[in-house]
Length: 145
Image (tube, rainbow, N blue to C red; front, side):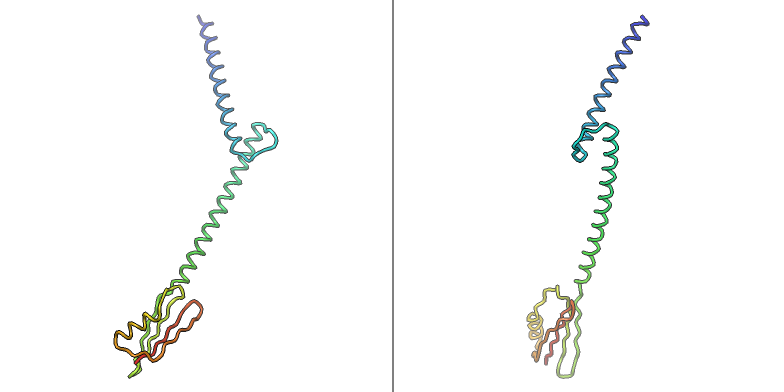
């Protein structure tokens, strides 16, 4: 009876080992399919070495891409800040006349005619209106009575 159990255990271990080898072969095939195409057939240790090197290369690329992304985000944020110039309104009372100065960023959609219409609605007579560009700013000066 002892001899029968030993033979059955040996067969069982052989089956387990065969399944393990099949499973490992399947895993190595999947690993090989994920690597860049090779012209020659590789041994298992060569494949593992190449997979390790490839993963390290991909990690390096990922870090490089993350750095590039951070740089691009910073550049984009800086450009947004440069463009966002808050309007500045300055009104100077010159006795009978009124001088209105408005400074805006060039990116702000602003119609000088709309601003003049508002002044006229308030009863001002426009004597002159000028617009100057300085860098990324637009400076509007309106002289009214």
